Image (cartoon, rainbow, N blue to C red; front, side):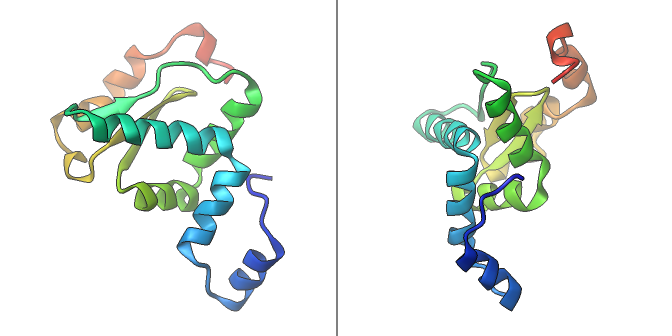
Length: 130
């Protein structure tokens, strides 16, 4: 299961209304590694002048890797995090997540990061089973 959904949030969803902040709070508590990694990258991006900030450090265990994969594989979770932090997320391999300013999405550096060429160049044998 990706998220630990509270009975109240489930009731909200069943009635049709889910507060975006309540959903992000559920993501934060259910996938703490993924949330904190992205939050830290957002802080790095905002503190500097670079076009993006990214993570190149593998997660400490498969549990954390799973959290990151679940967060980025779900359109709802990924989109909620992007809206919450005001960024665009990009993802390569099993742990290289990057945050971009929304205005840089589709620009030269973002296009290079998300290209097939970059994906191929960022492969290594240890990523094949992740």
